Length: 172
Ligand SMILES: [Fe+2]
Ligand SMILES: [Fe+2]
Image (cartoon, rainbow, N blue to C red):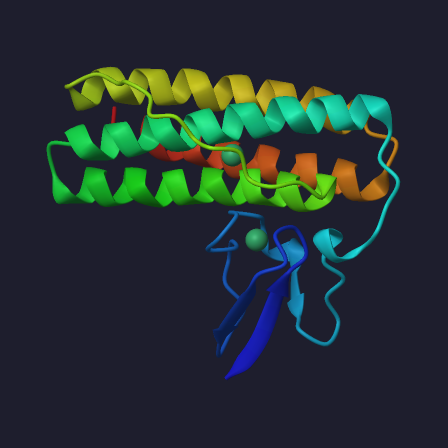
């Protein structure tokens, strides 16, 4: 068994091989390193520009809302598989929010419940819209970031959200 650390969320994965994607934040395996070699972005004290701060706060709002929306969708899912999938995606979005709070050195805000449809098909459609929107936004935020760590963060979560959209499309 070995300890692997994700450089995006800073969480440790214990196993015989490194996972293909981070099970916590969904970052691709190029961000996952052996524990002794990893330099997690949340562990570095960095100066954050006003623009990146603004973009991170918008990300926090988006991610906490997504968490609540996906928990609602999990509650309305027709099968255990869909319920479990939405619960997992909700946790990944919450992890993204948690990374932002660490980068900004702030507390996690209170998360208000959100509404969703009763039918999976409608929730799938909305999920794809939400994820596609997040991908476009994070692409822009990555371009705007002057800080290496922030650029890395937006690049990594952008890929994670694109993966969510791909997954949902496979159910259509
Ligand atoms: Fe991670
Ligand atoms: Fe996310």
